[in-house]
Length: 275
Image 1 (cartoon, rainbow, N blue to C red):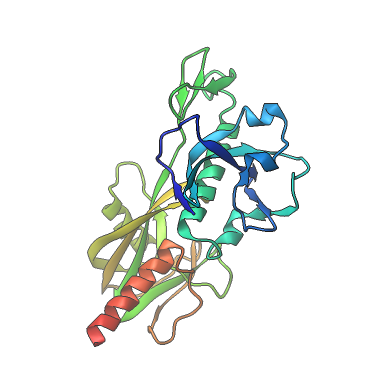
Image 2 (image 1 turned 45 degrees about the vertical axis):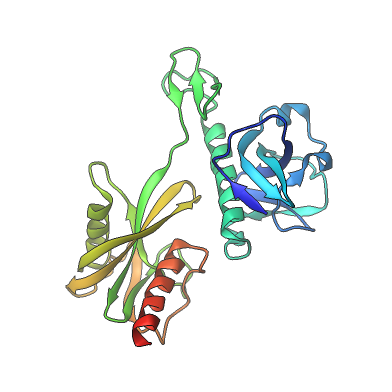
């Protein structure tokens, strides 16, 4: 199976559906959180008319249009359960997770923009693009993505990892934060690390990005090297920070996350240098 978020909509394709309820995804028991074929659904026409196309789902040489429905409270059409998207991290492949994340972001955007934020009138879907428009004042509302930076700081072979106030007590991750108005991504990395742990960095370099649907970020991943300063966690966002040897790492994020991928990238580079 393969998900392609950018394919153009073609009415001739068959449909598969993701059922969303707030931050939850319906998961049939047979296939973990996979979209449901149209012939397995018996949903009200009013719900199906509000379905959003989110991309193409390829399976067994067949292309399906993947739709998402904000289901609300209703009896599921087949046996299964509602799962938090975050609980699926590391349990499904990245393409599948990306699809589910896109589905939740689209339904959240549509739910939060049923009314115009300027004049308060009802909005409606705008033909030909992903937008809600107000027929009264002509305001247009597009899905919003918040750009964030995330960075692994290293000191030789050691890694700087931190325990955030929103993480479990034994879970350590890389440092991250939102880009402020007027900043570029590199300035945001330098500022966030200075604010959160009071050190300076150098040799900052971009590695990769990842869509992060909690609730709607684009994470820009960096590596950097320690330059100066003593670690001083701010006590608000960061409860604890320390340098860890590659041979003595705490519990870290799974490889399906960009934080886990930055850590894996550094460890791989060490392995190559040792060889």
